[in-house]
Image (cartoon, rainbow, N blue to C red; front, top):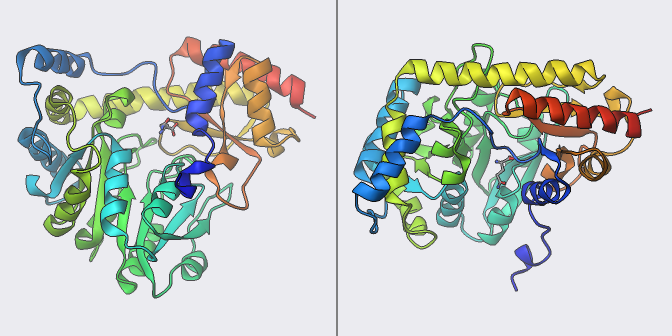
Length: 385
Ligand code: GLN
């Protein structure tokens, strides 16, 4: 057995969703919406399943989806891209896995930011990388020059960045991006930039792609996800976008990971990416309203919340809410005894965890939020001061 995977617990998202199903609890844990997907995109996928070919599509992706991804980012983020720079993958996680397998040689140092999405670290280790962790802490979760200086070294080969960031719900600002870009350039490092939440930004924020910064286009692999853009997380259609040279490298690994992705879903994603600006604005407004609804309701129950600038997530600070138990105890008891599943943020740390923050998914219908908050109110009565 490979030691990287041998002793890993089941992903916290899967574990909490399983517990929620077993207990009949409301699931505010794993990040998936229970509303808000575009029916026309689903209809396109259904039509393509019966009407078009279901045999292997090209390894790098359907030409129309590769072109649609390039056009989408040109339109929405002013990036200048060609279809050749896009590799379609089976979800963003596969894009990340293929990128790491392709770009890390054993012994290369890889800079990661904690809290980190749970897949990153095992994939870095399995690729032979040596992790160098930058620890971000609440309430501001800010990237500082001192922290980057401590993590980067002459052996740094790659950085995994995630913006907007899961689980903190932060959109890192232009100053932090410029800082990171400077360190990447000075150390001749590649950035794998997981930007799957790029359309889920609130309060008028616009997304800043790392590859748009001077000197970064040639050293960034930008990761995106149709599942997140269209609220269809089970589709597992993602992509990696990079310079033609880096994209070709990623494709070499991708061809032996999943090889291809279902063609009907690719065709539907290609169609969806061309939807007009109003669709994206309405989608954001809908999720922002859900965030506001959950925030008001949990605050009404006496919880202290942290800012939520993007993603599907809102974090509550247990300690500041007068709850003395750690996040894992809180979540374990909340799902077993109070009928609500949430995610302990300590699960996103490989070392020195922050253990007083719990992540809630707000991408839910009003009734789901109402039931979930009733569970959280019970948890506060049971576990609070
Ligand atoms: N991205 C989702 C989340 O953060 C989880 C995806 C998964 O379960 N692997 O909740």
